[in-house]
Image 1 (cartoon, rainbow, N blue to C red):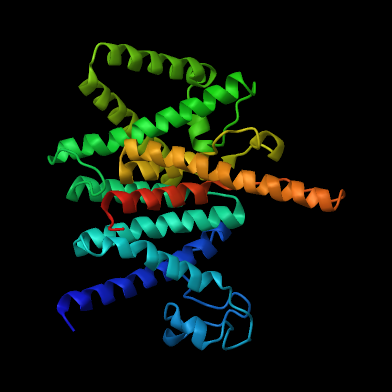
Image 2 (image 1 turned 60 degrees about the horizontal axis):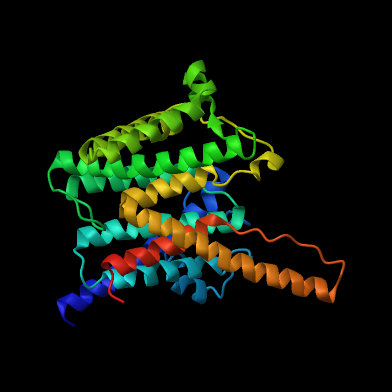
Length: 349
């Protein structure tokens, strides 16, 4: 067998292993459990799996979808996630180096994990998106961007990465805040206790005017064609977000959060998890592709909402007592649009 074919086989096996790790993330993160300890075990009887019971795809079929110790049924999600991860990775095998393949696999694993958690639990864990932001930012600054073109000096790459993060986060954060403030007449936000204590009273009371002021400054600079200054402005915003909210506020400070009740939370346009995932998409693909992904995700959600609406109307026509409200998770739509965009940019269809 040629060496190149052996490499492809090894790469596909590696992708299946990453899919197996994605299953760990999907199961343990919503439960606030460590993703490293304890080892893989049956959730029903806590039996620790042998090495031959952890082979991606194969073990599920050898065990006939049941735990070898207690006979409990193993969810078909496990082989499905492994298979999806490998299939999403296949288009990148022909034109990527091993270093780039590893980078793409990490992005795909995080993306699929976020989509699956949001689909099942209706939450997008901030820690997973933030970890993705830090990983992709570090890789891009050290090795260069993979999905978009940028200058090659260390300073230029750093500015580009931070600009992508700052631009997306500011636009989404300001849009969500202003819409909630002026249309819903409320401050719909989820904020950690450390950020709440650090924020000054002036900024807290006048945050809407801060957003409007920065938007006005951007418009003035755009009209005067001060584009380079805009890059550094958004890079500064991106650095502020990365240091304050991602590293300090989430990973280093107290993780306790103030949350709105369900009635208020439903009024928000995008949740904090959606915005954090958009930050991850932005540093991975660049802000232009990230905006296309956001637009495509809205259309994907709209498509499934129409299907759900038709299904509800059909159910009501058969039974007047049937009553259901369609709820569409935004994370899977973002993930689907993101992976499709990745394949269109660098993959081979």
